[in-house]
Length: 167
Ligand SMILES: O=C(O)c1cccc(C(=O)CC[C@H]2O[C@@H](n3cnc4c(=O)[nH]cnc43)[C@H](O)[C@@H]2O)c1
Image 1 (cartoon, rainbow, N blue to C red):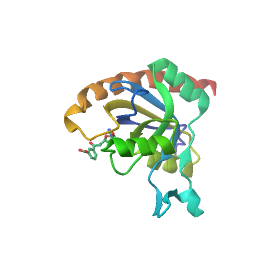
Image 2: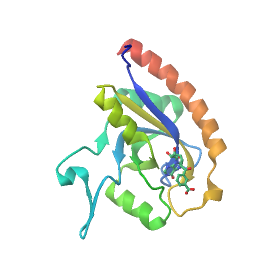
Image 3: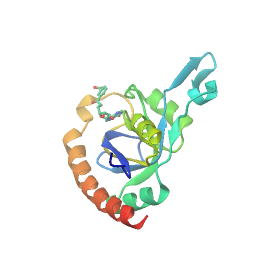
Image 4: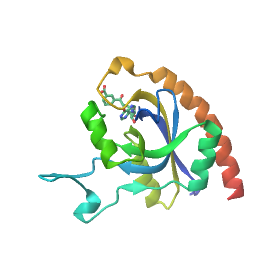
Protein backbone atom coordinates (compact mmCIF):
# COMPACT_ATOMS: atom_id res chain seq x y z
CA UNK A 1 0.00 0.00 0.00
CA UNK A 2 0.84 3.68 0.02
CA UNK A 3 3.33 4.53 2.78
CA UNK A 4 2.45 7.40 5.09
CA UNK A 5 4.90 10.21 5.90
CA UNK A 6 3.28 11.37 9.13
CA UNK A 7 0.50 10.52 11.58
CA UNK A 8 -1.26 13.46 13.23
CA UNK A 9 -3.28 13.15 16.42
CA UNK A 10 -5.45 16.26 16.69
CA UNK A 11 -8.17 17.16 19.13
CA UNK A 12 -9.14 19.13 22.19
CA UNK A 13 -7.53 18.75 25.58
CA UNK A 14 -7.12 20.06 29.07
CA UNK A 15 -4.43 22.71 29.58
CA UNK A 16 -2.25 23.08 32.64
CA UNK A 17 -2.55 26.68 33.82
CA UNK A 18 -0.87 29.06 33.33
CA UNK A 19 1.06 27.56 30.38
CA UNK A 20 -1.87 26.53 28.24
CA UNK A 21 -4.99 28.64 28.85
CA UNK A 22 -8.42 27.77 27.44
CA UNK A 23 -8.46 28.53 23.70
CA UNK A 24 -4.72 28.12 23.24
CA UNK A 25 -2.96 25.74 20.87
CA UNK A 26 -0.56 23.09 22.17
CA UNK A 27 1.96 21.20 20.04
CA UNK A 28 3.49 18.20 21.77
CA UNK A 29 7.26 17.98 21.85
CA UNK A 30 6.75 14.80 23.85
CA UNK A 31 3.76 12.46 24.00
CA UNK A 32 3.76 10.68 27.34
CA UNK A 33 1.35 8.21 28.86
CA UNK A 34 0.81 9.29 32.46
CA UNK A 35 -1.05 6.37 34.00
CA UNK A 36 0.29 3.22 32.34
CA UNK A 37 2.01 1.24 35.05
CA UNK A 38 1.36 -0.02 38.54
CA UNK A 39 0.35 1.52 41.80
CA UNK A 40 2.64 0.38 44.61
CA UNK A 41 2.86 1.19 48.33
CA UNK A 42 5.61 3.63 47.33
CA UNK A 43 3.52 5.29 44.65
CA UNK A 44 3.01 5.00 40.91
CA UNK A 45 5.57 3.04 38.87
CA UNK A 46 5.49 3.48 35.08
CA UNK A 47 5.70 0.40 32.85
CA UNK A 48 9.31 1.24 32.09
CA UNK A 49 10.03 0.97 35.82
CA UNK A 50 8.47 -2.49 35.73
CA UNK A 51 10.96 -3.51 33.09
CA UNK A 52 9.02 -3.32 29.83
CA UNK A 53 7.26 -1.09 27.37
CA UNK A 54 7.71 2.57 26.67
CA UNK A 55 6.01 5.68 28.03
CA UNK A 56 7.03 8.46 25.63
CA UNK A 57 7.32 9.30 21.97
CA UNK A 58 9.05 12.37 20.49
CA UNK A 59 7.64 14.05 17.39
CA UNK A 60 10.25 15.45 14.96
CA UNK A 61 11.71 18.59 16.59
CA UNK A 62 11.84 20.82 13.48
CA UNK A 63 8.23 20.00 12.68
CA UNK A 64 7.11 20.78 16.24
CA UNK A 65 8.97 24.08 16.10
CA UNK A 66 7.50 25.08 12.74
CA UNK A 67 3.94 24.05 13.58
CA UNK A 68 4.12 25.91 16.89
CA UNK A 69 5.39 29.02 15.09
CA UNK A 70 2.65 28.81 12.46
CA UNK A 71 -0.17 28.27 14.94
CA UNK A 72 1.09 30.43 17.80
CA UNK A 73 1.10 27.25 19.83
CA UNK A 74 2.79 26.41 23.10
CA UNK A 75 5.16 23.42 23.02
CA UNK A 76 5.59 20.91 25.81
CA UNK A 77 4.66 17.43 26.93
CA UNK A 78 1.10 16.35 26.24
CA UNK A 79 0.09 13.66 28.70
CA UNK A 80 -2.20 10.83 27.69
CA UNK A 81 -4.55 9.80 30.49
CA UNK A 82 -7.28 7.19 30.77
CA UNK A 83 -9.14 9.24 33.37
CA UNK A 84 -9.80 12.95 32.89
CA UNK A 85 -8.20 14.82 35.78
CA UNK A 86 -10.86 16.10 38.18
CA UNK A 87 -9.05 17.53 41.19
CA UNK A 88 -6.34 20.02 42.02
CA UNK A 89 -4.46 17.28 43.87
CA UNK A 90 -4.31 15.02 40.78
CA UNK A 91 -3.30 17.96 38.58
CA UNK A 92 -0.47 18.81 40.99
CA UNK A 93 0.62 15.16 41.14
CA UNK A 94 0.79 14.93 37.35
CA UNK A 95 2.78 18.16 37.08
CA UNK A 96 5.17 17.05 39.81
CA UNK A 97 5.79 13.82 37.93
CA UNK A 98 5.91 15.55 34.53
CA UNK A 99 7.26 19.10 34.98
CA UNK A 100 7.22 19.68 31.22
CA UNK A 101 3.52 18.87 30.86
CA UNK A 102 1.39 21.60 29.31
CA UNK A 103 -1.75 19.59 28.51
CA UNK A 104 -3.52 16.27 28.90
CA UNK A 105 -5.77 14.33 26.55
CA UNK A 106 -6.75 10.72 25.96
CA UNK A 107 -5.55 9.49 22.58
CA UNK A 108 -2.03 10.72 21.78
CA UNK A 109 0.07 7.91 23.20
CA UNK A 110 -2.04 5.19 21.56
CA UNK A 111 -1.77 6.96 18.22
CA UNK A 112 1.99 7.41 18.71
CA UNK A 113 2.44 3.72 19.55
CA UNK A 114 0.60 2.72 16.37
CA UNK A 115 2.66 5.15 14.30
CA UNK A 116 5.90 3.87 15.82
CA UNK A 117 4.89 0.30 15.06
CA UNK A 118 4.84 1.34 11.40
CA UNK A 119 8.03 3.41 11.58
CA UNK A 120 6.06 6.59 10.98
CA UNK A 121 6.68 9.94 12.71
CA UNK A 122 3.87 11.41 14.79
CA UNK A 123 2.60 14.87 15.65
CA UNK A 124 0.06 15.76 18.36
CA UNK A 125 -1.79 19.04 18.29
CA UNK A 126 -4.43 20.04 20.85
CA UNK A 127 -6.54 23.10 21.45
CA UNK A 128 -7.47 23.69 25.04
CA UNK A 129 -11.13 23.31 25.98
CA UNK A 130 -10.70 23.32 29.75
CA UNK A 131 -8.15 23.76 32.50
CA UNK A 132 -6.70 20.60 34.05
CA UNK A 133 -7.95 20.66 37.62
CA UNK A 134 -11.12 20.44 39.68
CA UNK A 135 -13.96 18.97 37.62
CA UNK A 136 -16.22 21.71 36.26
CA UNK A 137 -17.93 20.46 33.12
CA UNK A 138 -19.78 23.80 32.76
CA UNK A 139 -16.43 25.52 32.23
CA UNK A 140 -15.46 23.36 29.22
CA UNK A 141 -15.39 25.48 26.05
CA UNK A 142 -15.67 22.71 23.47
CA UNK A 143 -17.14 24.67 20.49
CA UNK A 144 -14.51 27.39 20.91
CA UNK A 145 -11.73 24.81 21.17
CA UNK A 146 -12.98 23.00 18.06
CA UNK A 147 -13.09 26.29 16.14
CA UNK A 148 -9.52 27.00 17.26
CA UNK A 149 -8.55 23.47 16.23
CA UNK A 150 -9.99 23.95 12.74
CA UNK A 151 -7.94 27.11 12.32
CA UNK A 152 -4.77 25.61 13.79
CA UNK A 153 -5.10 22.45 11.72
CA UNK A 154 -5.35 24.47 8.50
CA UNK A 155 -2.07 26.18 9.37
CA UNK A 156 -0.53 22.83 10.35
CA UNK A 157 -1.36 21.29 6.98
CA UNK A 158 0.57 24.05 5.20
CA UNK A 159 3.62 23.42 7.39
CA UNK A 160 3.40 19.65 6.99
CA UNK A 161 3.18 19.93 3.20
CA UNK A 162 6.30 22.09 2.99
CA UNK A 163 8.05 19.87 5.58
CA UNK A 164 7.35 16.83 3.38
CA UNK A 165 8.75 18.57 0.33
CA UNK A 166 11.89 19.83 2.08
CA UNK A 167 12.70 16.93 4.35
O1 LIG B 1 -17.40 14.55 31.77
C1 LIG B 1 -16.26 14.20 32.00
O2 LIG B 1 -15.68 14.50 33.04
C2 LIG B 1 -15.50 13.47 30.96
C3 LIG B 1 -14.93 12.25 31.25
C4 LIG B 1 -14.28 11.54 30.24
C5 LIG B 1 -14.12 12.11 28.97
C6 LIG B 1 -14.67 13.36 28.75
C7 LIG B 1 -14.53 14.00 27.48
O3 LIG B 1 -15.41 14.64 26.98
C8 LIG B 1 -13.18 13.87 26.79
C9 LIG B 1 -13.35 13.58 25.36
C10 LIG B 1 -12.26 14.22 24.49
O4 LIG B 1 -11.72 15.42 24.94
C11 LIG B 1 -10.31 15.36 25.18
N1 LIG B 1 -10.13 16.11 26.43
C12 LIG B 1 -10.57 17.37 26.60
N2 LIG B 1 -10.23 17.84 27.80
C13 LIG B 1 -9.58 16.86 28.42
C14 LIG B 1 -8.99 16.79 29.72
O5 LIG B 1 -8.99 17.72 30.55
N3 LIG B 1 -8.39 15.60 30.05
C15 LIG B 1 -8.34 14.57 29.17
N4 LIG B 1 -8.90 14.62 27.94
C16 LIG B 1 -9.51 15.75 27.57
C17 LIG B 1 -9.96 13.89 25.16
O6 LIG B 1 -8.75 13.69 24.49
C18 LIG B 1 -11.11 13.26 24.34
O7 LIG B 1 -10.80 13.30 22.98
C19 LIG B 1 -15.37 14.03 29.74
